Length: 631
Image 1 (cartoon, rainbow, N blue to C red):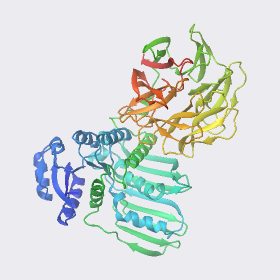
Image 2: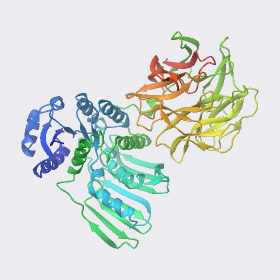
Image 3: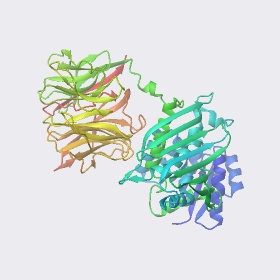
Image 4: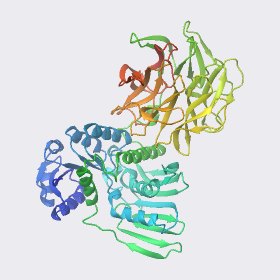
């Protein structure tokens, strides 16, 4: 590759560190040129360029993005601005290195990643720690069993920074987590999550956390305890009000490794089980260690890659999602985000149960409700629909509109995951039990018999049943991961069918029981998938770059699939929430002729509850759904 023309967008403190590193690489003849800088002030950009030896200075970010000679732009603005800055640069097809935290939340991050992938340009998060030579040195010590088997990690990155306006301001995505805590999370992730158990990546199964908030509402001090699938644990802390501490320790059965400075790892030390220092190494540093991520990007670009192996897009999304979850647990949100309470407030919703005709493309209102109803499910004889509302299951006669509650006794907290037994005796439902509030699958009966428990293990969310009524398919959380499982309809041992990282949900058999359709976030965006009934041949069926696709419902004649789609700006990839503008999409075809791309057949206000379970009519010409409106 020719010399990499490197540009910096933003001329704040972090930009000075990168500028010094880039200039050192240039002077050392390492194939990097300190090419251009940009600020919202031309005077500031010119001063910065002169001080650090960059060739060009721009007084706007737009001008830099339009420069045809720039090979890679480093976004060095506050992380509250990364999203808009990245979209601007991607609009002009620029390769990007975006300072951590990548964006303020996972929703913004997913949009940036999707756009970069669609345009085919290079994109990486500038988590410089992952590029350091010290990381491999520590991994080599661990692999050589110099501390035996790794059991736990401790990390603390704290620094009194609350006097800095950006860090205490919620509007600027302030707080300790995104600036400092991300290093503690990364330290644990590098040395624990990268390990594999039987070919499956180690993953977090439990998180315990608390925080003390600053008076402005951002997180000031955070404690995070993580438990992993193989029994390892991580004890993490970060603070923007505590005295300086920047250290990580990896504990093994025969010793421990201490890392001075989580961010740049200036020294690594090996101790035996008695605490005796056995080895100490100060890893190489060309300038200030920022240079390694530049060299990593250069190597990736020369290979034609669109992301760095050291910091792939999937890892960025994983950490961003993890930080979103932590902030949600603390009740910390930013003004430009909707709080979970706002998203889930359905107190003013009216519901409209409708039937869509595939041949005419028209929708017919069956009944209007002055409350939330969800998940219509069509009976095998075509005469009635069932739905859930306020914890109970109801049936509505299609011909007359008459509504009757299905007797369910103590099963009175049903969610929108339920299917009809093909024999007409009742329904299998997901019910949140009083004991622990977790969802378990029960069978309830039209004749009023007492409900029967099917899945003692929880949480379990039902979605599919075979045409013979013998087997159920459902989404369940086991050991911190949501995957697809099956179980005999009479109860028994469950079988796990998916192992991919992230949410695997909505499993549903086709009428022959040959395939299970489901949705999975494994590629970074929720998409429709299909697999054989035994879990083999897992195949992605939709490839929407900017939409999250949920609940693919296969018609009885196996030639049509209807699904729900959220735009990327409305939900994070793994979110299925109410009160959103969504689309219903239709995919047609078969395995012999192939499947079409999904096309939009209806736009509506809905989401959670609109079409959670298979609602196709027996004739495969109509399906039922629910749209909503605020009172």
